[in-house]
Image 1 (cartoon, one colour):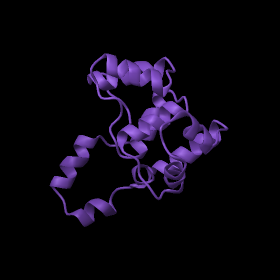
Image 2 (tube, helix red, strand yellow):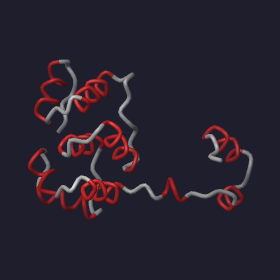
Image 3 (cartoon, helix red, strand yellow):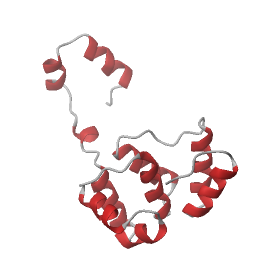
Image 4 (tube, one colour):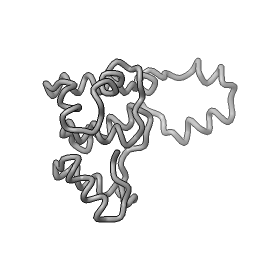
Length: 140
């Protein structure tokens, strides 16, 4: 049974780090790795890196560096990649989580616009227009 994060915080507060580490499994969380998640998604969607390059503002060298794990994109770049691959909201959030960024959240104005655009399969250009029209920072 999976333990609640609140309970884990309590345990961390009340035990030594060595005892905590020895009594828990970290495989699922520590295996989150953006470039592996992205490469797996490309394979599942039967797409290539050229799709990201064609549909985004990312350069060829930067895209390949991300895919190799040599570069870690910022949150906006992860979202750009998700949009360029026509990801679902769930897939976009998986990419964000795998890069240790917070998921898109509907309580944030900008995130709400991004969620709407992803759900409507908007291109990066249309997404940026929607962001700009609503006085939010565009993706770049």
